[in-house]
Amino acid sequence: MSRILSFGSLNIDYVYSVDHFVQKGETLSSDGMHVSSGGKGLNQSCALGKAGCQVYHAGIIGKDGTFLLDVLKQARVDTSLIRISDEIQTGNTIIQNDKEGDNCILLYGGANQAVDPEFADSVLSHFSRGDVIILQNEISSLEYIITKAASMGMTTVFNPSPYNEKITPAVLDAADWLILNETEAMGITGSDSEKEEVLAERLRTKFPDKKIVLTLGERGSCFIRSDFSCHQDIFKVHAVDTTAAGDTFTGYFVAGVLHGEEIPEALRIAARASAIAVTRAGAAASIPWADEVKNALYDSL
Picture 1 (spheres, rainbow, N blue to C red):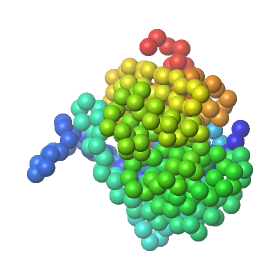
Picture 2 (cartoon, rainbow, N blue to C red):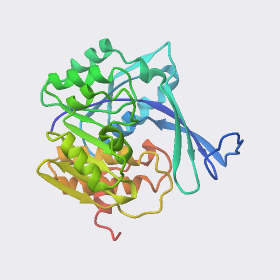
Picture 3 (cartoon, helix red, strand yellow):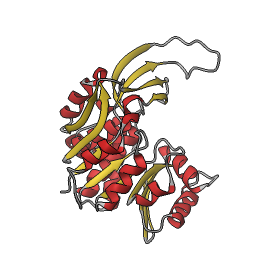
């Protein structure tokens, strides 16, 4: 199986349990607070590692974030390509979790925004044609990294989250796979509709040569290609914390494809893994191991 480079963010999450999301001008007491690991890059690396892939994480942390290395290692992720900076603080988030299990997130990029072309070159020198790179939009030098990886012959998987001006046409052109939610799909295609059939057709028209996975929250997910598409419903569970649901889905879907699963089965595995994750508190800590997902697929749902 191909080696995977997950080049992405590493965050310290400060998670607050609240009755409702704080409003403008409001002071709100929290029912609890805990500190944990996070970042879309770290979460996706943990999902890939727990799903049984050979994954290397690359990124930058400050000295305050060295515990994140242990989190990755526990998920069987290689951390040898992570740089520890003496000069900058680790990226962090302030997360509000409400009583319905929903969340809102305030992000500070920190060391994630210290990734430069020189560091990217040093990381990419360890990989070659046929390897896989997975990227999100929480680090700097995104366009440089994905275009160089594509020119090297690596398979490029891009999760355009969060959606903003850094997601240029060059970034999208360099991606072999896009894994995105309805908000990101609307931004990229210019659609004013969240309907699956509308977004799927717009994505298919705009990117006829790409393989695309569109996640739709409670409406499930779908795979889109010029000559084939399929839909996967969610597994209904009681959600406790949705923070890492999308990252769990992404990691397990990519792992399923690399393990040789057909697309419908890869979607089903990813949906089940994500459903397990939302029943648990935390980000990386909520991501299940492959055996848990496999066993759960045979349980009554």
